[in-house]
Length: 420
Image (tube, rainbow, N blue to C red; front, side, top):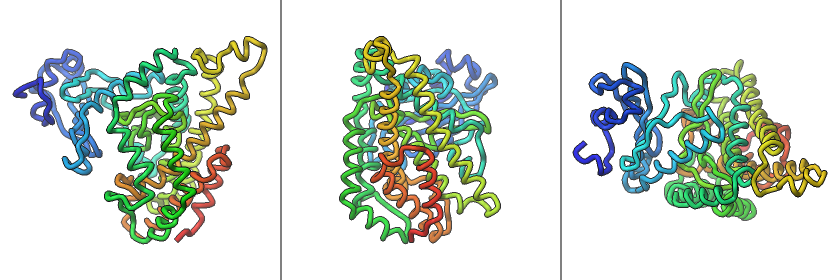
């Protein structure tokens, strides 16, 4: 590079000279950059992503761009999001060891993170579209959500450390603003960058005409924007998980912030529900019921795994200022009822966030491949309508759907409905 102290988007040809001077990198893939193979593989909405292969090994390099790649340089974005993603990965690795890729190097000037290359892992969303299964997927994700939620909160952290962390991540302003607009606001009016499938107009008009629904969404936006319960991934979906047939890792936490404990859980469940509703377009009739049942079992395992791990951490790691043993166990009283009440609140929030995510992924800017890969427009709109209708019920009735069994029964009912 001409000036290593000035940011500019890197090319495969430049990466070798940039990284060869970093001992942590050269030691992993080989010291001679002439023997490296560098190729760009990023197809996401925001960043450049490269695979760098050498005689000793392989790494992934992710560099932030100063704009939204999906839109172009007309939508600028700050490079500092890489700083926050790096900090998020470090904290997630501490709070759930082995759940995220290891970080080998961070270059703040170039907004560049070098991390563990995951192979033969595949983006989970694509595995779900392709009809592949992952062993223990739901249990892993439930534990991840519980561990990061609990250990990132004042149930576990010292209050001073938590407040310091909230202050650090509060500088990540523009990225959460995308969520506040695209997720919580844009789906419910005719925002400029919105788009939806032909045929959905009656369903969309019904959502946008429901003042009670929109008020519930805005109440959840207030929680998202104002509640700093724990550090959240911020964009936890099937595209931010990579899996083999038996192992998974969570990636891409650049939307990190401190927020409600139920946010990541709700976003995650929403993306499994969308995978569920999209399956008639991806599976042969003989395979459809079995695979949809498997997806529902994953959702069940996520929710059950979250509750089980959260209760375990409550019993063993409740060392923060919240719900201290001095108020309960030390006085010979059980805190179990308090834990269950908190879990009920988290679940209600999660289901509300879940419904909102189901709406935004079919109505605002960034849709997902579960539906977007469907070529038959009539079938696509029919499946998306089921998704939108269930999302509305989740938003309006989240407190009444506290059990996984009720949620899965609701999904089955909407899967059998013809909304259009």
